[in-house]
Image (cartoon, rainbow, N blue to C red):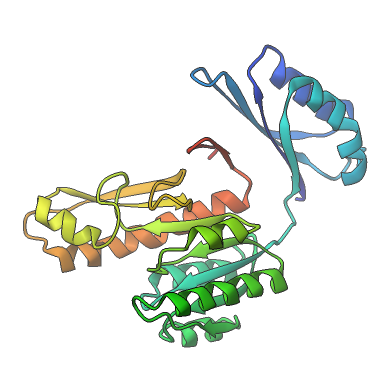
Length: 286
């Protein structure tokens, strides 16, 4: 079933849900889901509506023309999406390919509403996996501490992104810090997987940090990338129990399953238009 999805954010006020759902009803839309959250602290309303596209009396262009005055009256920032859209995405990976493998498989069985345009790696370890799924692989070596090589790799990735008109970049254990210049030039969001339950154990070697602290839970966090390392808005998290018997290597082994599941879930939520960002937080309509 083809559906339309409306995402909106506006100052909180009475009647927001009634006015938006009433608009869909006015043009004979069969509403399937209506999600709303009012954040009292910021006095902001967030809304997600989904309805059947077949039988709806407006096409995309006429929807924009008809809904814009209503949205303007509510001070709403909004976007309309159709469920059959398959935006192009790019994936960056290093040596470990468990997160990449999950994304490629989900895409293969049509559980990822996107088209994977390319995989790029700073090592060649994942090349065979990408090509197995018929996805182009590009190798951009970035020796540790080589600033020129990193700049060249980022330029090449941005060129690939522009060539393929990608709408999302996924860091599936890229293990490199993207520069502020890269993020400023990006015309798409970037989603990362961090192998820790943020805000604990930011930065490098979080499993070693966790082992040193003797934690009883480890976690994984998927978030949007910002210029502040591991500080971006969080989309999805999960945890697993561990014990004093687990050293850093055992924690990393147990954590890989969390990493791939959390990243895949975050990417799916984003592509299904279930995430609304505000400030350094998110509203996620599961």
